[in-house]
Amino acid sequence: MVRVRFAPSPTGYLHIGSARTALFNWLYARHYGGKFLLRIEDTDKTRSEKKYLDEILTDLRWLGLDWDEEPIYQSERFDVYRASAEELVRSGKAYREGEAYIFRIEKGRTITFDDMIHGKVSVNTDDIKDQVLIKSDGSPAYNFCCVIDDAFLNITHIIRGDDHISNTPKQILFYEALGLQSPQFGHMPLIMGQDGAKLSKRHGGVAVEEYKRQGFLPESLVNYLLLLGWSPGDDRQIISLSEAVKIFDIKDMRGVQAKFDLQKLRWMNGEYIAAKKTSELLPLIKKQIADAAKEIPPDDKLAKVIDLYKVRIKTLSEFIPMTDHFFSDVYTVEEKGVEKYLKPAESKMILRQFADRIESLSEFSHENLEKTCRTLAEEKGLKTAQIIHPTRVAISGKTTGAGLFEMMEVLGKEKVLERLRMAQGA
Ligand code: GLU
Image (cartoon, rainbow, N blue to C red; front, side, top):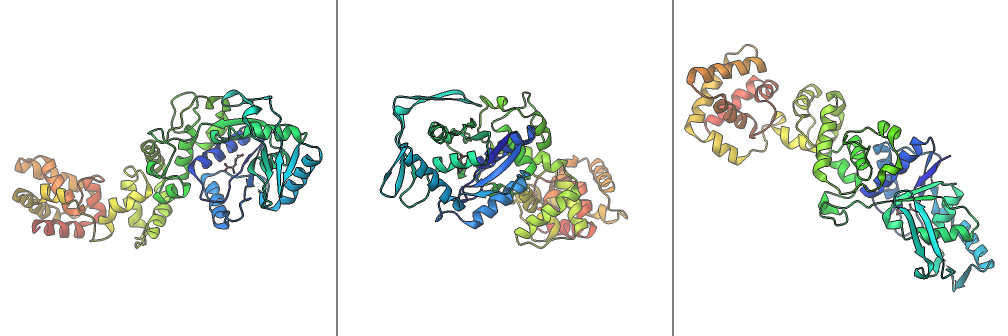
């Protein structure tokens, strides 16, 4: 049975690259009906923190990556590592230097393994130094406890980032010395920024948490990470996790570039937001508003505005600045739009005429508003744009947004007239 693991160190938030590692291990397990396990690599007691662990587990759940069995903690297994190190000293494969245990590397050998993603990889042991097993402070070295735990958990496949490829020959030597069978290894290309440099904050953020806060949906983040290293073999972009589980094949990971493209992620997130029901978005938008320490509007009004804007926002956090004019009289105003569309005397006249006409509407519906606008344009020999642009700036302060007449309907007659009148005096 396939058994894979994700082995985070709780010394920081969940990195987007680690989330992708977790995702591919999870996919591999779910595709083959195997198990996906968690191992907490908290050997560095001073840098490991409970708050980071909680955050990592919360983020994994948020992404939909559920795990099997109870996680194991390396900090609870120091005795096990020491016992194995002593065993290696007794059999002459390791020696001690003070408190430290060191593994002796036999020179002149070639270690070869068949990487699931890279194919054959060979390393000569002449290029490997003797390896620390247990450091003099009593804590185990990563390569050693990793092997002991992977064997203990009966891990069959290890899928991790390319940054670990140089560790693998050392780990293979430990398996051999301990009389254990090596699992299969697969190393994924690291995620790079568009400029080819290692992913960093300036490429849009490195922690899953940051994306969550900005209002990326877990479905789109996972979908995006999926395509950062794997392709379904055609040019499909929108693939759900459940679909990916069915069609995932690690062979398709070969040669796929892993360049982080924030614009593509934003596009994808926009697609997922637009496809959601307003009732599903409502609690998510309310959370954004609460987090921004703003007053939460009544559900019915908020739902109407979400209906209008869900096809326009790329992240949930964009909703607030784009729609502030619906919920308060204090909203952002594009000064350039005011200059261009509200300052000219002609605009003021048009706004007055439009305001006069809509004042007498008994039903303030977007259909009626549009009809009124068209009739006015025809009668005065205007283009509808000459009415629409100033009106939009007058009632929202913005030059872009949802359809003007829908927006007016949601704002309501009183507010619209108030703002149209005010704009004439501007
Ligand atoms: N804690 C290691 C890391 O986060 C795990 C490496 C591995 O998967 O073996 O890089």
